[in-house]
Length: 69
Image 1 (cartoon, rainbow, N blue to C red):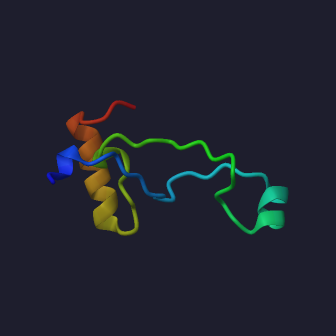
Image 2 (image 1 turned 180 degrees about the vertical axis):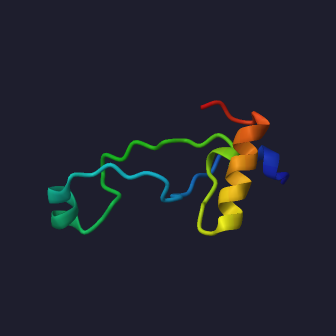
């Protein structure tokens, strides 16, 4: 089967978590039963910045106009 024909699949990327400190202390988990996903529609919206090169890449993507701020 072609990958284009498979159902959509999602994974946690760690980009954003909104959780109350009390809930985190009680559950020890960032992901609960009432999770609402933030879908990132493309790799240019999910750039992981860990190094100076990553930062320069993100700046280049932003300067290219590939994403709107």
